[in-house]
Each structure stands twice: as C-alpha cells, then as structure tokens.
Image 1 (cartoon, helix red, strand yellow):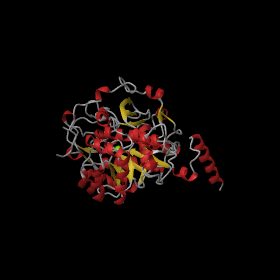
Image 2 (cartoon, helix red, strand yellow; image 1 turned 45 degrees about the vertical axis):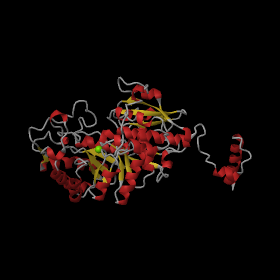
Image 3 (tube, protein in one colour; image 1 turned 60 degrees about the horizontal axis):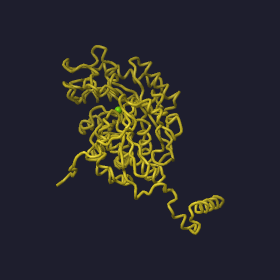
Image 4 (tube, rainbow, N blue to C red; image 1 turned 180 degrees about the vertical axis):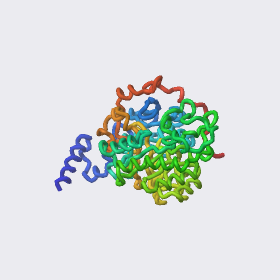
Length: 474
Ligand SMILES: [Mg+2]
C-alpha cells in the first residue's frame, strides 16, 4: 500500500509538472511515462553518419555515430579489423529514415553485408539504431528485445600463450584466482610444438608460417591462429583441408601435455575451452580431439572453416568434446544449416558480423530449438561489448561471452556511464540506462585514435553514392 501511495503521489506531481493536472490517475497509468519527450519519435530522422577509428581496443575498431534531426544519436562499432567504409557505404541508404524502424532499415541494408569483416558495416548501423531507439524511448536495449533472462553475463577471457606449458598454466590460473573468471580459454595451436622435429607433417612448399597477407597482421600474428600456414601464394588464404598438414602422434602428445599442465594448475572444476589449432586437416582434428577427451574441455573452436558442414559433422560425431564455430558467419540461415545437421555442438556468433543485435537474438532462439547453446564472440571495444551484453541478457540459450581486453588497461576508460570495472570478477552487469547505456569518453578515445584518423569528421562525400539500384529481384 505504501508503494502504491508513493506511486500515486509521484504521478500526481509528474502530472502537475507536465501541466496535466486534469488527467485522472487511470489515464496517467496508461500514458507511456518513459518516452523521452525531448524527441518526437515519429518525426525523428537520420541526418548524418560519422566515424572515429580506435586503435588496439583490443583490435582496430571503427566507431560510428548516427546523428538525427533532434540531437539524439546512436553509437555502433564496425567489426574489428574491418574498413570503416563498410559502414559509410550505407550512409546514403539510411539518410532521412526514421532510426526507430530498426528492422525495416536492417532489411534494406542487409544485402550489403557478408561473412566475416564484410558484415561489419551492416552490424554497426543496426547497433547504432538500437542505441538511438533506446534513448528515444528511454529503455535499455535488452528491454526492447523482450526483457532479460539474467542480470549478469558470464564472461570468458582469452589468454596469451607461451611455449612453456608451466607459464601458460600460471597465466590461466591467474585469470581465475586474481581476476575471478569462471570460464577460461587457451590457444592450443600447432605452433606450440612444431619447433620440435617430427611433430607436424607438412609439405615444404607451404609458405612461411605466420605470414598473413600484407596489412593483415594482427590478431592471428604470432599466435599461430587460423592463418598459420594457411596463406597460399599472393596472400590468398587456403582452407585447412588443402594445406596437406597433419599432426604426428608426437605432436599430439606434446599438445596434450600443455593441456595437462593447465588442468593440473586450474583443476577440472572450471570450464576450459581451446582455440587456434592452426591449419590442420580433418583427420588430425579428430585424432587430436580424441586425445584431448580426458581433459574435459568445454569446446574446441574453429577446427576447420565453418563452411564445411559435413566435415564439421564428421569431427563432431567422432570427438566427445563440444565442437564450436560461428564468429565469421553472417545472418541466421548458415547457422541454421549447422544447427539442423548438428554439425557443431555450440554456435558462437560475433554480433558485429552475424547481423547485429536482433539477428543474433534470432540466431540464438533458432539454435535453442535444436538444443544448441550460444556463446558470443567479442573482441570489441566497450561499445560492441555492451551491444553483445544486451543481446546476451535477452537470449535464453546464451552460455558465455568473450572478453579480449584483459591486457588493455585503458579499455574501461573509453566509455562513461557504466559501473567499472566493466568486466567485474568474470561478469558484466547489464546496465538499465537507455540504449547501450554508455557514452564515449572523448578524451580517452582521442588518445587511442588510429593514426591519421579524425574525431567524427564530416562524411559528406558519402551522402550520395550515385543512383544505386538496390533491388534484389526483377
Ligand atoms: Mg576464435
């Protein structure tokens, strides 16, 4: 009763403040109190899109700002390592649109996205539209998605590798004991063992290791990631199956030793996942997976390229550790192919590639129907991380999301308006503020601008890209 009275008092005073003293309480109850009356949603129009490219946050991330005729703006992030032009190309297609019509705009522009980095522009725009709509209607994004299943999002962190298994194990232990993470991930690439003779069988003609195409050194560089040995002549990436690379029993035994050292250090109670195996063939994936079974890993990630549904299913059927893929997949349909075939045990979309916030929730809901859980890939700035968090909060089959910024000590400082540390003891608390729930800290962001890039400078050259004929059918 006390609360009810308090609410009536509040409503009366609110009505008085609004000059609505004649309204009855009943009418006031029905009035959408939370609509931000600074803006008239139906009159809202997109007037501009500008970009600031941040560097090493942890990757290169173009942050976009979509402006409107009412001063309210939305923030989005282009997938790490992708060109800002993927977003700017869309500017002429969204100018004059009402940003609150998120799905309508998404359907208009989604033909300009694609797998991996090509999805970056569409996803950045979609993210910024949700931020805008949330600010206009004064609700957090998770609420517009249907509400939340959880207040805190479990986070896993990547761990920098070491050729010394003991050092590697200590780093993982520190993640758990000092930082409070409840889910760990390690890189377990063939580069850990291949300096030792007779561990990896591969043709001598395969190009030098760790030689991604010019200008693409970054996440994979030095980590022996997917690119390892997978780049053929002229920087054209070669899929694992076409590199003729297989692990020997000795190589597999040495890789198992790394995992054994980690398990010895952190025990078996905490989930431990593994990624970045290198460009090894399907048979080696299966032999390695079988050898790793006793270490009870939580998933083996991207063992081969995601496009190969039947080969993935072969690995999944043979190996008794969950097989996971998805960070480079654009839109729901390819995820459904994998889920329907049970070619993977877990999917891991990156919502800066997968189609944005709503599409990723749809992907999660689809996967749930097949009994497949969803992990969310996230090597983003705090902007993309919070977009990921809102989606994770609102999707039931969510398992855990990534944080790739444990070594980036200024990562939190890039944004304001949210409790810090953003990742606290292995969890992100979903904010209740409108939209994404964050603002950029201009001073901190300016310190980490990509060299040669400005701070949301005019982009008029993108206002009109000719007379595009965007139709998909005739
Ligand atoms: Mg990965």
